[in-house]
Length: 162
Image (tube, rainbow, N blue to C red; front, side):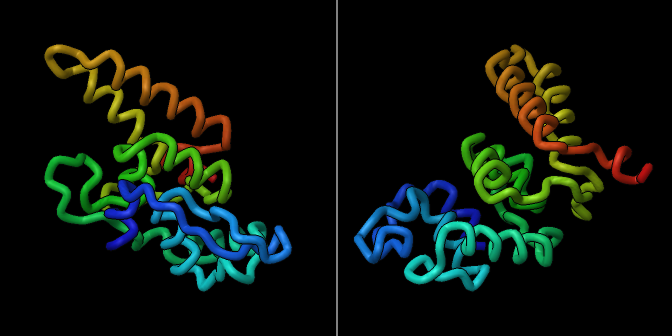
């Protein structure tokens, strides 16, 4: 999926900004943002940011179980939900997906039976078992876990209890 490749593509999309009376403005700093809008039938030349964000959320709710990144052999997230791939690419991508676009992280990925929160908790445990332990990786994932919890993320067990 192109979205997966585009997490690494820092490329400004400049176009008319409907919120600035048609003045040229940078709308996206990474290609994945443009991909999300395109996949959602949102038009950055016509839709206001909130309209585009709403379309992205709608697309996400309909397709989140099938949005996967395959064939990245050096990634633990290969074959799993794109949100998990976003964490491994850069924590700023996950933060944007949840904080800016308000994408719901509370679903169980059929690829591994885990939520994004479960996956991050497991990653901390995995990182602690490596020799030598990568303390920075552990700290980064612990910060992601706290971020996810602050936005209401749940484990699969918590979701199944509802």
